Image (cartoon, rainbow over all chains, first blue to last red; front, top):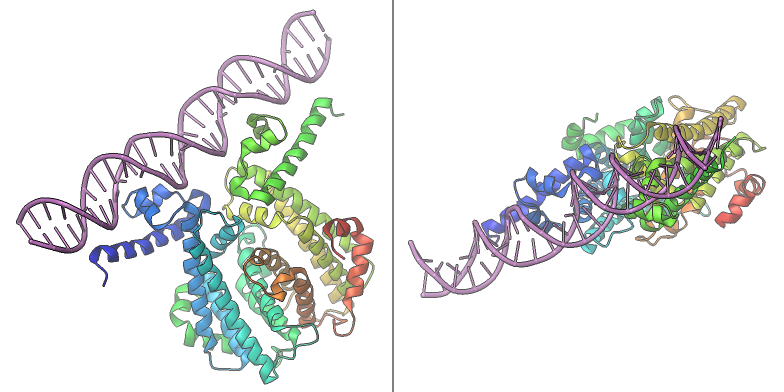
Length: 241
Length: 241
DNA sequence: TGACTTTCTGACGATCCGTCAAAAAATGGC
DNA sequence: GCCATTTTTTGACGGATCGTCAGAAAGTCA
């Protein structure tokens, strides 16, 4: 029931997000100018402000959109066929795909959260972003919980599924951030951020004693299968594999 | 051999950094206004620009200063008396102290690096920041290397000291970032960011098989000792222990 | 004390955000 | 197809901040 005009407006919002996302990646937030975004799709600045209440809000909208995409990737990984630990590996593969496909996201989300929640950002937008993060944690939590239930993941005193998920998330976020460091440090471990992340995630899960350990099984094969079965298109686009 | 005037200028630079750091923490970078920084110490804007070439440069200077402090804390931990793994624990304690004492730093460093290195930042400032990071990695690398040499840390095929250091760094950075999330998610593991970081670091090093494992030795005591011997003043100020 | 150097100042040009009244386009009844 | 009404778009404008620079003030030293 969308009139032609309403459809045009909808499409334009996506277009605006595309433009803003690209500018964010190429020039950074400081150089994300509202007039340029408007000009890039042939409208005036006022029209942009009809979609996004402020520059910060536009940034948040970009972050919210890619965060939702990430959550969707994570949820696709949830249905992977395999042992709990293999399925967690599929989640890691999802994170890697996202890592490669949306390089702007880290900067965007960090700015949104770091801006100490500028009141110029729509609350709804923040809620979406937050919900997406929780969806990601939800997937990881579910898989780890199943690992505990199946006896593969023997948590010790004081350890919890949440702690494990936070740790993986931290490793992943840290690797995301380290991409910036590549420009400054030349070290194989820093250079190959994704490979290092994979290895470190395995070490981390081994540390929990999550069976089968990476010394018992080669998880590379499972990762390849996850990329092929779940993320064929995305992995192709990202140049993984 | 500093004239009174030169001394005054030196002192003023520290004062400016103090003010900027506080404003950064309280209001965020968007609200760090050059006139307000100037006014806060009773000089005009032009004078501020005599110290820092631009607003971005002021931000970078704040980040560089705290990064140097972090490097110093790390290097203090290097001389801790104990097994290699206990000494790495002292480094983690240093990171925790810094974490608690300089909450502004993560935001600052992230902005500096994320701004795609605005040409308005003095190259020297960036070099200082980078050098401090490398000093931190240097300490961690040295300790891990000693662990390998002593036989406590048995690296497997494809693993490296650099990979281990990157992993710890990522965990640490990720935890730093997660502080922002605390406002949104209510979960014990998220809430107690430092405690979770400690536990996860132990799991991670256990995953490498770095002896003695945390299941064999209680590293809490070593951590307490490190805080007392190395960072008594800082831990007190940070409210740790 | 006075000539010279260094430092400081704040008004100014330039830039960008976000607004809003007026213009343009779309809608819908006839 | 026409026109009244509603929705949408426009771009000039006010306000705010950055960084500059010529002139004023303060400092230095013989």
